[in-house]
Image 1 (tube, helix red, strand yellow):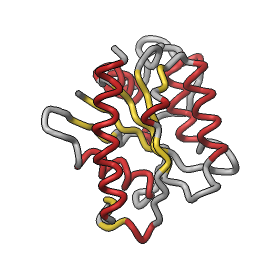
Image 2 (cartoon, one colour):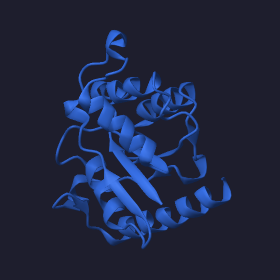
Image 3 (tube, one colour):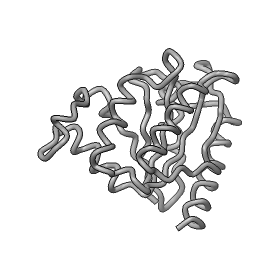
Image 4 (cartoon, helix red, strand yellow):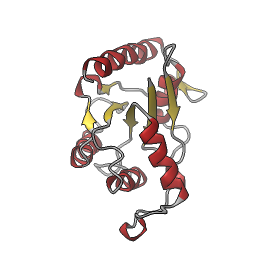
Length: 177
């Protein structure tokens, strides 16, 4: 299985990035996870530019998505919704239909009672582009900054939860094909 992990945060030390880096590090044998690092490099979406040839950064993003068996998102919430840079990434996927029917899930690391606006917007956008949301493996796992060291989650309960998440994802993908 090949996963593409996409963080909605441009902040290097974000807990979203740390959670996805940990998912990558915990990939079971026979699976691979790629952490997308091009969010800041994407140009602002302009429908006039959404034709061949698209900007290089957009072509690279679309290729990574097309090569993945599933895409997993983790995003912070800004002002009650998705960060603009992350929404920009999603906008670049609409015209290509690269996420249409693609299995997707999200991992929310927001504190309890937070992050609902971002997730609601993400679900709306993913529904609009007809991605196949794997609700059974979407995960709420609060991760505080003090649980992160060297860009990864270090606390055992959270690492164990992310390892179990991998197993659940594999089962979900195998049974939903």
